[in-house]
Amino acid sequence: MTKTALTFQQYFSLDDDACIAKIHELKKQLGNELFILGHYYQRDEVYQFADVTGDSLQLSFSAAKTDAKYIVFCGVHFMAEVADILTRPNQAVILPDLAAGCSMADMANLRAVQQCWDDLSTVIDPDVSVTPVTYVNSAADLKAFCGDHGGTLCTSSNAGPVVSWALGQREKILFFPDQHLGRNTAYALGIPLSDMAVWDYKKPMGGLTPDQIRQAKVLLWDGYCSVHQRFKGEHVDAYLAKYPDAQVIAHPEACFEVCQKAHHVGSTSYIIEKIKESAPGTRWLVATELNLVNRLQEQFRAENKVVEFMAPTVCMCSTMFRTDPQHLLWVLDNLAHGNIVNRVQVPAKIAESARHALSRMFDITQASTKAN
Ligand code: 13P
Ligand code: SF4
Image (cartoon, rainbow, N blue to C red; front, top):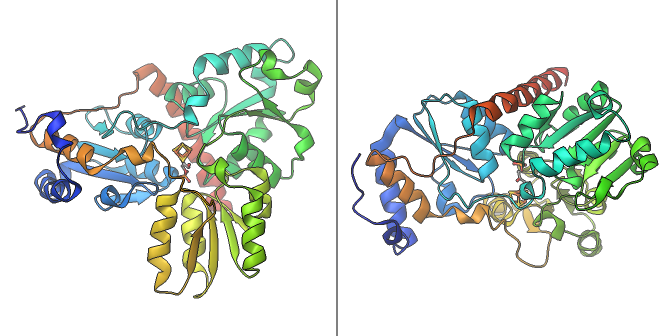
């Protein structure tokens, strides 16, 4: 362990080009000991360094497979937690900026979910009649909660089979924190909106009456993604009025109206695949994060495909954006000097219960892939 030549502050006075040149050198120097994971929403200056890129499900699989000693996660905090849960204790998972969180994940916490469970138990027995399902965009202790209560988690790639499995276990599900993913997924499985109720976690009993709780098949936590909620039905209408032959594609974190109006709805990897396999000349309106949409625009320009962002104002994920070349350089330079900085470590007991939830999710995903 030796001190780096620069102080923490000095990395942030370097410009992007200087950082990028140094990161190339450090990647070479660290060789196989280092594995960088990059989510599709990362900015290009950082994304270029990823050994593997993907959506959150693909990145979980990649984290579980690597033998590298240092796993640097260019993504957000809950993703690094999943990587830590799936790797061995002698592997260190590092998040270049610990403030890279997810505002949606922050809309649910263990205290509020436990309160919800306690409130539900005054009306029904939730351990008998409710399967808890958390979106991967949530803290590790919520995944542990699901693991301990017969539930699981999902990503936007496997939400359909997971919700279908959960409804097969018990008569109701509690889906948190993203109400939109829960609603869009359950509706696509044939559950009418009248069988769904929103649990307002800021109100006693979620703002619901005992009858509303008894009647609901799907209880949707009142959380949302501030990026994806910017897309509106009127954006789709205006675009299709101008370009009637365009295809509209949305991430399922977008609201019900947008997803109903879209021709296709799916995860980030689904969006990439759909645009990739479309005929040359196809025009696309896309409802997901701006860095990914800009990259697709560039990537498919040569095939004459037009890829446009749905909202009229810029909306990138500000927490994904926090991972910049300066932070990446700082963590890599420290690794090259034998210092592990910004390690994300989930306490063992939470990790064990969360692993149950994750392994259920992997089993459900694999079973549904085989069946299709
Ligand atoms: P994916 O699961 O599609 O990667 O999405 C993660 C996310 O945070 C979307 O906002
Ligand atoms: Fe969270 Fe939304 Fe950012 Fe995804 S885009 S990480 S859900 S804030």
